[in-house]
Image (cartoon, rainbow, N blue to C red; front, side, top):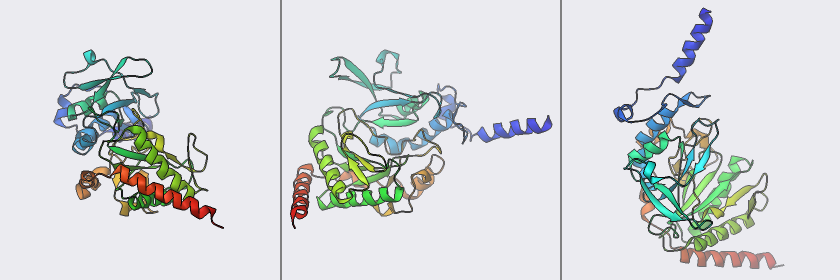
Amino acid sequence: MRRRRRKSRAGKARRRRAPRSSSLREGRFTHLDKVFWPKEGFTKGDVLSYYERAASVILPYLKNRPMVLNRHPNGIRGASFFQKNVDPRHLPPFVETVPIRAKSTGRSVHYVVCNSKRTLLYLANLGCIEIHPWLSRVGRLDKPDFLVIDLDPNGTAFAQVIEVARATGKLIAAAGGRSLVKTSGKSGLHLYVPIRGSHRFEEVRAVAKLISRIVNRRFPRITSFGHRPQAKRIYFDYARNSIGQTLAAPYSLRAYPGATVSTPLEWREITKSVRPERYRMRTIFRRLDRNGDVWRARLRKSSNLARMERRLNRIWEEMRRSALRP
């Protein structure tokens, strides 16, 4: 009996966390001790503590963007769901929303817009482990200010994902663009190209498709693109460049074992030794204290999408002509 009681106490000690900040203790948050990561023992309170501390680096990536709520009310092993529409009458007054007419129904959908730490913590209290903003902002919802490519490994070795990502970044540079890279927080990588927000989604998607097509031609045995991913081939998900589509925000937690974080990196860090699982809720602040947000300065310069498209078309045509030569 004594041995069992000691095990029980040890189990409780494992889930004990550092004291909450004063704002969390004073806020109207619920079930802070509910375990969200059973293996690691991390709780809902840990999620709120993380976003309270990370707010200064994540909020710039959320400003004036509609949010799709990805809610995990019972942690990463419980049922989860996506929520777009919220009822503004049932929200605290500090939570901003924007009505957007849905083409499918003709009705307005009210999306949360996360412009403050209070709103970010409110979403975390709803069970939003992950933070998913649109690629466009209120005022120009049909014109994104990022081109994105989601590299999904689909069971391939991560070393191959690194190889393909580096080739994609070099191609974008050859076309006159500037690209950024981050871990997905799961098994892949996300590439972002800051653009001026003057092109519609279909134009941006066409350029992302062209980038994917060229790299796929260079790596035909390990990559695929199109409507459906292929097993054991890295999938270029360029269709993310569509209105209403989202990716996990930079510095978003992921509902994934280890409590990983979708982490912005520098291109020089994209080597075969990098591992997405290295960047976690409990370790990310050491990196931020040392390096800050490595994307911040690079976001000030956007790429000229029209010029990129012209250069990419020339590269593609040269590849086609080379393939036809005897």
